[in-house]
Amino acid sequence: MMISVEAVSSGDDTSSVEYGKRIFYMSSDVYTVDNLSAVFINSGHSEELSKHYAEKLLGIINTDEFANNIGAIYSKHFSKDELKELESLMRSGVFKKFIALRPAIQQDMSIALSAAADKVSK
Image (tube, rainbow, N blue to C red):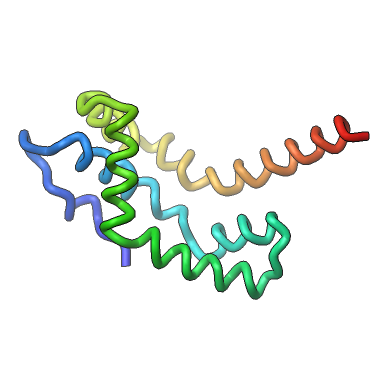
């Protein structure tokens, strides 16, 4: 079960880690069994094992502990004001489209990179 953005506290006392968690929650809906399975399949695992790994990984991703870790990572690299600005940007329609298409884009980029690597190794 995903924790909604609204479950994260808001207001003047919101820490940069909390804003980082919001950023994570806003982009974490792309983590599905199918999308995560593709990562494992691309690494050479069978479909069955990839689905098993994806389900286990999804169970870890969908915890408040993991979100806190990700929030801390964001707050390490961005100021509180930058995270607030990023949150605002992420609420835009074009960014929502970007997030929705990110797995397909990453898949296409991976294929293009593999093709380029094949040229280098020949």
